[in-house]
Image (cartoon, rainbow over the protein chains, first blue to last red):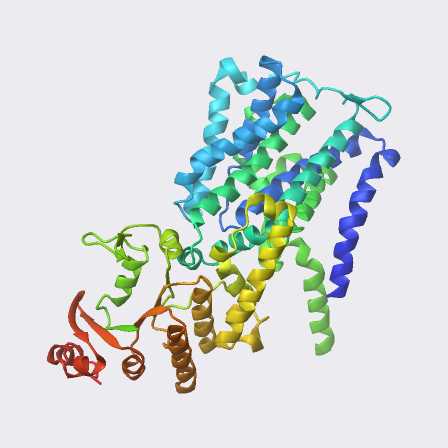
Length: 325
Length: 226
C-alpha cells in the first residue's frame, strides 16, 4: 500500500515537472507532435471515463470534438473572434448540446444510451458534410489560423509558430482537465456518481436525482471533448467531417477500456500507449482498427482491470506460481 | 409501526413502489401530511421523508460498509460544484459532519466490526442490516421496510427485530412488509392484510389473527396460517 502511495506521489509531482522541461531536450517536431496528440487523447479518454463513472457509456465524444472544432474554427474565421474566446465557447456549445440531448438520452439505460449517442455522432458528422455553405462539406475547412499570439513583455512570447508553444498549450489543457475531473471525482459529487453506477434505484430511493447527475456527468464530459476539438482544429489547421466519425469515438472508448476504467490513471495510460503503438507500426496503417480491436480483446480476456492493473496482476500471478512450485 | 402482510403476489411490494414513486398509480392518490405526492419522482419523495428498502438486497456493492452509509447521507450533505472543486472550509466541515453521522448510524445498527469490508463480501444477514442502515442515513420520517428479515437465521432475525424496534422508538414511523408472522405480530401495533391487490383486513394483531377472511386467504393459497 505504501509503495502504491509512493508511486502516486511520484507521478503527481515528478511527471508534470519532467513534462514541463521536455521541449528543452527534445526539439524534433515529430516527437512533440506525438506528445501533443497524446495530450488530446488523454483529455478525450479521461473525460469519457468521467461520463462512464456514472454508469453510462457514451459514444458521442467524436461528435462533440467535431462540434468543438467547427465552432471554434467558424468563430475565428467567419466572425473574427480571438482563439482565446472561441476555445471556451466551443466547449460551452458542446456542453449545451449535451445538456439539451442529455435529458431525453439519460432516460435510456445501458446499451440503448450508447446507441443513441452513436447516432448523434453520425448525425453531427452528416450535418457537417451536408451543410456546405457553412462547413465546406466533405472537403472540410483548411488554413485555420493559429491561436493569436500571447505576448507578455519580458515574460512570455508565444506566437504558436513552433510546435513548442502548442506543446505548452496542450500541457495546460491536460492539466486543467485532469485537475477538474479529479477534484470532482474525489469529492462527494464523485461518490454520488459512483453510487448511481452501482445501483441507481437505491440512489434514487435515497433522494439522489440520478437523471440530473447523469446529465451533469454527460455534459461536463462533452465540454472537455469540445475543448479538445477546438484545440485540435487550430493545431492541425485543417478539419474534415471524416476525421470525427464514429471510429474516433470507438478509439477513445478503447483508450479508456484498455487503460483501465477503475482508476483515474487508466485512460491516461491507455491514451499514451495506444497513441504510440500505431506510430511504431506505420507500415500497417490500414490495419490500425484491427490492431486496436485485437488489443482490446486481449485486455478484455486477460487483463480485466486494464493496463493500470498490470503490475498487480503480474505480482499476483508470480506469487501464485511461486507458491505452487 | 404498521405491518403489511398478505400471500405472495398480493401486491405488497407494489404498494411500496406506488408510495415511493417507482411506479405510477393508474387511479388513486398518495397523500403525505395531507399533501398530494402522487406520481412524483422517487428522489423527490425521498426528500419529503419517505425512504424504502428493497426486497432483493440492493446496496452499493463495491463500496465498503462505511462508504455505503456515507453515500446514503447524500441528502444531508449536498455539496455544490465549487465546494467540491476547491475543497472549501464549508465542504470540509460537511465531510466531517457526514463522517460522524455515518459512524453513529453504523454503531447504532452494530456494523462497526465490518466497517471497511466491501458490501458485496458481507454475509447475507449483514447485508440486510446494512440495507436498513443505508435507508436510515437518508433520515426518513416514514421508513418502508420490504421483508427485512428474509433469508435470516433465527439469531439474525432477533437482532434485526430489536433494531427495527429501536428505530421505531427513535420516532420514525415504520411500515413493514414481512412474511415472518411471529415477528410482524410482535413488532406491529396495527396490521393491514392485502389479498389480490385489495385490503381484506386491518386491525391489531389479535383481530387480524382471528379474522376469517385472512385465514381463508392464507389457507386458500396453500399457506400455513399462524
